[in-house]
Structures are given as C-alpha cells and as structure tokens.
Amino acid sequence: MRDGLDRWADPPLLVLASLAEEAKHGYAITQDVGDTMGVRLSAGTLYAVISRLEARGLIEPLESDDRRRPYRLTADGARELAEQSERMRQVASVAQRRLRANYGWAGA
Amino acid sequence: MSAPEPPAERAAGVLVRAALTLYPPAWRARYGVEVLALLDDSGGGARAAASLAWHAVPAWVSPPRHLHGGSARMRSSLATTGVAWALLAGLGAVFAQLAQAQPASQGATLAQHPVIQWSYWAFDGCVVVSVLAVAVGGVPLWLNMLRTAPRRRETAWLLAPVVVPAVFLLAAFAIGRLAGRAGPAVVVPSRSGSVAVLANGGVGPWWFLTLVVLGFAAAVLSATGPAVALRRLRPEGSAIVLATRAAMLAAVTMGLAGAASVVAALGLYLWAPADAGYHEGWQLAVYLPAVLLAVAVAIVSAARGLRSARPTAAA
Image (cartoon, rainbow over the protein chains, first blue to last red):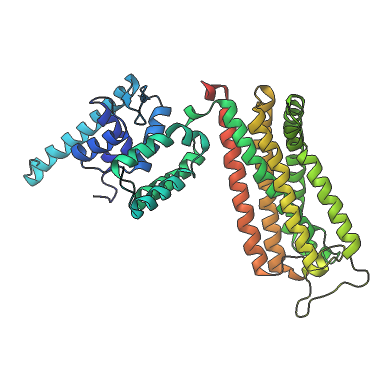
C-alpha cells in the first residue's frame, strides 16, 4: 500500500532493522529488506539512506578490500531502532486489541 | 573469453554512470564504487538510473556532514553563493538600466505610484549593504589566498574579479563610443517606449543585448575565478569563517534587492510601461524566474555554509 499508511516502512528504519541481524553490504541489505519485509529499495534510496544514517552515527562502514563495503549498526543505531520499534509495537498492540474488540479480527 | 555485454545492459550502465555524475564529487568519491557494485549485483536499469538521478538533488541541497570538513563545506558554499550573487548583481544592473536609469518622465509615475519609488530605494539600500558585505567578508579571504597562491595560474584565477569587470567596462565604453547614435532617440512604432530608446547611450537594441550577454558572461567568469582558487588553495581559518558569514548577509540583502526590483518592474509594467524597459510581458517572464532562481540558490547555499561555520557544526 503506497497511500501514506505505510510509514512503518520508512527506508531508514528498514535498513537499521536489516543491519540489526549482522553487518551487510548494499546488495545484501536490499535482498534482506525485500525478502523479510517485502519492500524493494532502489539503489538511489538505499545510498541516500546509508549516507544519512552514517552521518548521524547510527551505522558505520567496515573495512573491506572489496567494492562491496559492509555496514554495521552502532550502539546509537541500536538504541534508535529499539525506540522506534517500541513505538511501533505500542501502536500495533493498540490497533490489534481494538480490532479484536470491535471487529472480531484477531490479526493475520 | 567473456561474452560481450548486451546492448541493453551497456546502455543501462551508461545511464547509471551518467546519473552518478549528478552527485557532488565528495559523495561520488565515497559511495560511487559501492553503488556500481550494488548495480552489478542487482542489475541496474533505467529505473535504477532514474532513482539515482532523483536522489542527487538532496545530496546537493543537504549534503551529509561526514563527507566534508567544516572548511570544505564553507568553501563549497562560498563558491556557489558567489556565482549566484554575481548573477543577481548582473540582473540588478539590467534592472537599474531598464528602470532606474530611464528618462525623467518617470517623475510623474513615481509620484503617482510611490510603491515603485520605495522599491527603488529598497533596491539601492540593499545593493549597497550587499556590496559592502562582499567587500568586508571577501577581501580578507581574497588577500589571504593571493598571499598563499603558489603558482601563477591560481593568481590569475584570483585576479578574475578585478580584471574581468575592468575589461567588460572598457568594452562597454568602447561599444558606447563606436556604436552610440547621436541625435533624437528612436521610438519603436506602436509602443511609446522601447529598449532602443531606453538603453541610455542609444547603442540600439542589438548592441544593448550584446552588452547584457557580455555582462553576464563577465559576472560568471568573475565569480568562477575565486571559486576555482577556493577549490585549489583550500584556505581555512578565521578568514573563511568571516567570508561565510558575510556571504549570508550578502545573499540575503541581494535577495531583498531582487525582490524590490521585481516589485518595481511589475509596477512599471502595470502602471507605466512607456517609462521603463519592462513594457513587454516576456521581459518579466524572463526576469522574474531568473531572479527567484538565483536568490534561492544564493540563500540556500549561504545558509549551508553558515551552518558549517557554527562551532557545533564541526563537532
């Protein structure tokens, strides 16, 4: 859905969530985000996000002899991701409770 | 022996490389190879190239801080602000020639429409402050670079803001002397005023247009010289901080002068088209967007530099 109700899928959050598993390079991030979160990140979007997250110190590049430089989550990045996912969890929890109570829908 | 690349993939590769050239050099140097590696793996096409091209805009408008030191960002913003300021100065000179320098018949118009008169005063005041800001902030940095310029080539670039305007003024003077017409002014039929009449000195519309084009070329070249010198000499320290702060003031005041000139030009066009050069719609259609664009570039760029000049920005 691309009508403004998918803010949870903000690319910076998706990249942080992907790197919470392990350090990854650009292609591995796009694969992981596509496979596990169902969102396809273009090269332009991905590297705009990577440069912003790196500037804010939320991710950091690792040394690499290859052209594919991996990135990992920093402690600040993990804290930011934890805060954001807690907010999302609260919203999801409220939404599911009310859906269950009023619509008899218990979630997928 | 590897198989030759299919034409479609080759074309996509060219597009992606072309899109990467749209990014700032520091961004390209840091991420360019990685982006190409990603596209090698995922197969970049026209869509990837379009996405890259689109994201080049924010990379210029709001470049990631970690790619530039504070001084590098200040130098980069000074260079851009300088070119935009020079273009605004050129537009201001055209405005002054087409409006303020026009015949005494404007006296009645100015009395009847004081908003035009106020706009003239605002324009003059803002231009004076802006030029002073450029002088106070720019001259120390310019002298600093002139002292440290190791080679003749850098010195030549630094002398551009002095030599190029001087050459242009000499050329304008010579054109005025050689092509100027004595006698009564020529009036274009069906209009009560024309650029031919209004180009003081009576050089005629084509020579006037030539002078305008030469003037803009001179303005851009004058600003390009210091921009190249900034890139090559990489000055740092208090002189560049002062220049960056002054550039913000210069950009804002030149922007206000541009806004005042737009108000005056609109007023002249609506109320007294015969009294000034703005008696054709197309002139405003060119002038207004040009001023808006140059003001936007100058102020955005100067603000970026100012952010870098703050002590906390370097931390």
